[in-house]
Image (cartoon, rainbow, N blue to C red):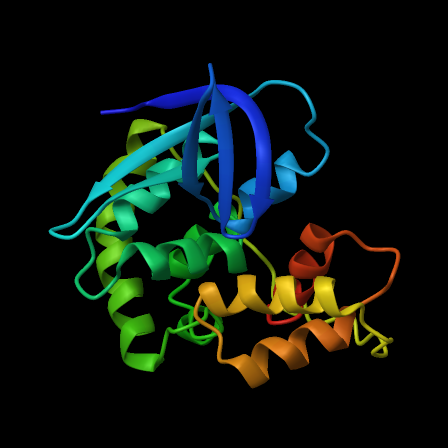
Length: 209
């Protein structure tokens, strides 16, 4: 399997990025947390990877940190949680936040993740609590408790450039949001001075508790 790739970024269209490694372009799906860290990367970058094999496809997922990759690989072992939902979780909140919510049994916070209803959130909390415990004890993952009350910035919507708006909405829909919801999220945080990655980041931050 491919453990990591090092090369030049030639395309970034969330949730997909293309990495040129010695003339070979690798298509990699990544969470928005990884895109944020790669936002200003013009030189060679290293992406930690996980190859996900299905009956109809072989998909390559990429991460900027080992903690993200560990959490992703742990999440997809949970019944009913696929790779798409796992990417949505890592895009909606940090590894630290997710682990904190699971440990605190904060099901309400978990339901704010795209595609996660109450029943799924409850299953996530129960199963991930047990799965994360040995990982935490091994030192591979650590977290600090998260306090509540983090909400949207409440910025007034501004005129949106169609290309940026559509790209941001496409990225949010790829993470599981419905088209009207994605458009509303983008409009609520948009500013013409923001990059595509920053628009998506602010839109996702707006759903946090």
